[in-house]
Amino acid sequence: MNALKSTLLKLDGASYKAYKDIKGKYNFSDFTLIIDRVQGDPFAAPSKLRVKVPQSIAGFPPKLYNSPSRKVALEDYLIRQFDRAAKDLSSHRGTGKSGLIGVTSLGQEVLERTAAFVSKNEIEVRFVVGLPARGRRILGRQAAELLCEDIPELVDRALIYDALNPKEIFPWVETVEDADALRSQLSENNLVAFVANGAILPRRSGADEGPLLKNAIAFQSPSSLEVELNAPNLGKIKGMGIPQGITLIVGGGYHGKSTLLKAIALGVYNRIMGDGREFVVSDPTSVKIRAEDGRSVAGVDISPFINRLPQGRSTGNFSTSNASGSTSQAANIIEALEAGANVLLVDEDTAATNFMIRDRRMQQLISKEKEPITPFIDKIRQLYEDYGVSTILVMGGSGDYFDVADTVIAMENYQPFNVTKKAKEIARECATERQKEGGDSFGRITPRIPLGSSIDPSRGDRAVKVKVRDVDEVAFGSEDIDLSAVEQIVNPGQLRAIAEALIVAKEKYVDDKRSLSQILDKIVRDIDSKGLDILIAYPQGDLAKFRRFELAAALNRLRSLSVKSDRALSVE
Ligand code: ADP
Ligand code: MG
Image 1 (cartoon, rainbow, N blue to C red):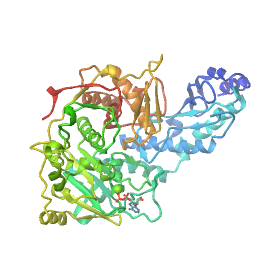
Image 2 (cartoon, helix red, strand yellow):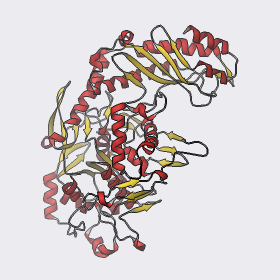
Image 3 (cartoon, protein in one colour):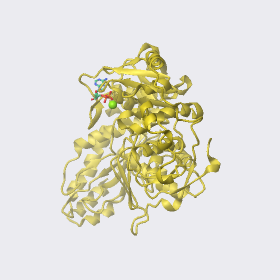
Image 4 (spheres, rainbow, N blue to C red):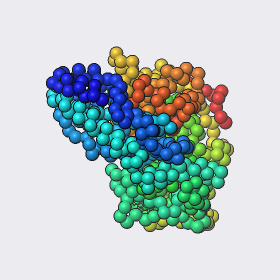
């Protein structure tokens, strides 16, 4: 530490580039500081650092990290402690990012990340620092304060067990372990989702994902849908079980339908203690589906839904650079199935009407031969019967779906009621008299083989140039991939990891022979067995775990993507 301090003091007044000399490893009394990457100027991306604290000093009891769920939860907790202390201590110390101390961006989800690692030997935390300067001159004294006083203070406050509150930290990791246990009990109970009694689903605002505190109505399951699951720490937890099959969520406008569906869509992730949705869990292969006009589509077999397009365009191998609402929704469904989704989540708010319904009157006016779209209502049961894929559908605007539903839940004043019987009675009494247009079976799902030459992360003379903007966009080579409609990407770190995974997938696994789903299998297996660090060349703290569906979503939205379809492999 003394060596670092005296180097920094000596650098005072030197040109910013001289900071490069401090790259390296320094022993402090309680930890090691590693400077992996030094920024080139005060406005550039901040420098990348790590601390490693031995367990002999950090002192975390193994009970806090001795299962995979607990380990991820403890790591997440420590990042948040570090983040809070860093916000306290960060101060503006000169030009640009001078003085900043930051960790990865955090939200309501508990995700596996590269910002912290806990093992029986040590705690490692990765963060960034804006090395202080005035203009382009090094501020050596401020740098010494930051690295040699503030960082040790941060370690003392955030990474030493005795400095933390055991009354908070134990429930924190237990909550995550319980949520994982509930999720793992869904399929054996023939459920696709579970919403615990007492859950607070609404959020504070469109800009604040924290729980609504004032006037929030807690969730209470209707007794006929109530199930009890086992949480290892909290014991038995009761709540509403959504069975496999087709579930409609109906109810008047503004009565909480979309809020419920959104909580379920994000129930593929664990939430932090205090979120209100800690015990809202869904099948990990649930994919939120929506219309997304304007997206590109590469060689997707959308023939189960769309046929006989004008000008004889093929839909068995459909490509476009500008999909319509209905074709984009069809492509989103087929791509989710291709990637292995067992549950689809659809909200009328973000669906294409002509994809969802086609009533009797319209069937009479526009004959089936003149309508390329087979509406979802005529495919939703086949999807379940042929492929075992369940759907949860928010549909307040059309009762035509009563015929095909297994379960109908009505939201009224933010409370769920089981109205299945009533809906079925109504379906019998007022028949829709629609013609069924879905044929005998759902149809084939044709695997696609992505072509390596169409995936190019290079730009100008740089072999790899990728950059992530929040959760919505990746600049990949010379293209921008728009992911703003992919609602289950919740953290910029996921997008950062997805961008890196595309590059690794292209290098290692895209060989013009493997199908997209085989490529997903490979890369997901690598990450599961060796960790997210396999995606990056040197230690960085801003990656977070993503699902195969969101990696596929990014590749599928790459406008240059081209594929061969593999009819030989197609599932009928
Ligand atoms: P719908 O989809 O039925 O039209 P939304 O789910 O969009 O309704 O909810 C409408 C409003 O009610 C939103 O502002 C939402 O935050 C709020 N809300 C939803 N659920 C609850 C609840 N349990 N308690 C209080 N407010 C809620
Ligand atoms: Mg809604």
